[in-house]
Length: 287
Image 1 (cartoon, rainbow, N blue to C red):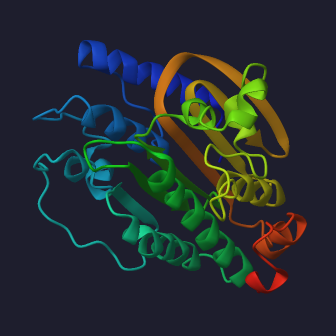
Image 2: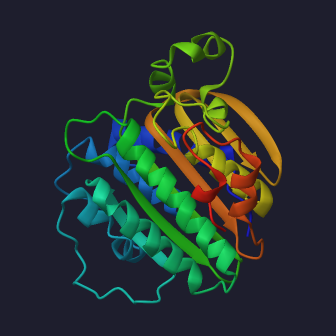
């Protein structure tokens, strides 16, 4: 199973732009969470009343609750989600109190194919940080801060989590920090956001941790971290990093995390390598 690349995502976002303009587009040959998360993100802004999807992928889209995320009646009858299913349907982020439950659910998803407790703990902690970021850094008016979905492929030994928020975007957020404005004139904001301590809201406890923790874990895991916002993108894939200037604008922030199921990680090591904030001590991290 091939890793998801910038080219894959960029092509699909161009396809979504075609859909927005013409109300029709071709479906992907192999659908992943990032396809559905970005589709739902775009369609929610169009307020569609109906949705017609290729028969080959419609059942999967229904399983991932695409129609429900759009507030449209599904053409399929109700179905019960398997407790040990290897997917997490699209969930709209409405309440910060859902953060813990969602991060736990994603960790449970991994537990169905992974017995390494360090890896499961790493997934749970990473996603708690990233989901919390949506609520901490987004400025929205409709009560929906973003959406998330995930899928495991046991045969391909890979997992993908996609998180798309509806906020002001990374560059606009980082510009709120006066200390970063000089760097932002020269550097890719998405790559900057993966550095330790880089945040638009300094002095807020764990601010600046989320994407840095994700990057370090995916480096350990030999996986993929893709960050896209505005006209900028950053891709970590199998240890190599690329900063990208994009033609297509993406509102808010798009995160695609692709995890190697056979690559155990140690989040304790990540935290031990980070300098501690002044108001914290080693006792705050127990691994």
